Image (cartoon, rainbow, N blue to C red):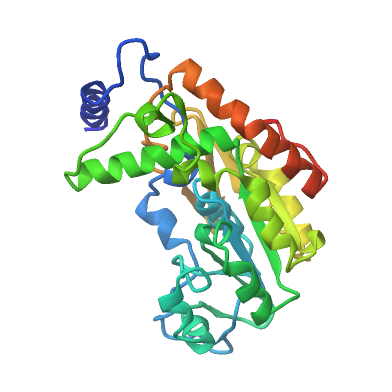
Length: 313
């Protein structure tokens, strides 16, 4: 069945491929487009409709994963949920970035959080918060001492991953699709108004967050490092959240067949879905260079803001 699905995906990519001068389609991991096995979903803390275990209550988050979209937020939340002192919200709430939800009030938001024990911290994740112009001030108004988690990856790869998710969503809904080059370039120039590019301007969005939160309250997780070697990144998060060190090497094992790390906890082994993300089309090399050149200055600005660099500089 898996080989049949791969064949179908290859046929789809060939059908909608860009002109012949483009590099042939290749495949890479879309960190936040990963489909998870049902058992992995089940590991996330009980949702807000569950009957409360004795001694638990619902509380507003102690920490929020604010983004970035297609950066690995789901993987980060699933891995943090290994920790016995973490209670993770099961769904993306979109309270601070969607006006219709924010208008429902803080009690509505709290009611969507999981039940937790006094010694646990509650964490929710909504990737749309990072690029929302309203979310920083709204979150600060709720709790100015809140600790924020931001997971980032190579911004150019994030653009391609963003496109890929929309591409497949449109296919599934029988809507027309375009080659990525047609979205990245307009009239021979890079289309900087393309939303996927706008979301990768990390410095622009970070500037808004730093107006409301000191840098010390924002921990940046390296999304590429998390996938290739999860433990060191998670140990940094434990320290940032003042959690006792409970995530250990035995919580992860490298699955040679699948080619990525899987989770082991509570006597169970759970892996990401066998597809491990959606196939990415290769981008015309000239267009890709245009994109990377445009992002370079924004990346340097971001590095100065956060006082560190990343491998995608």
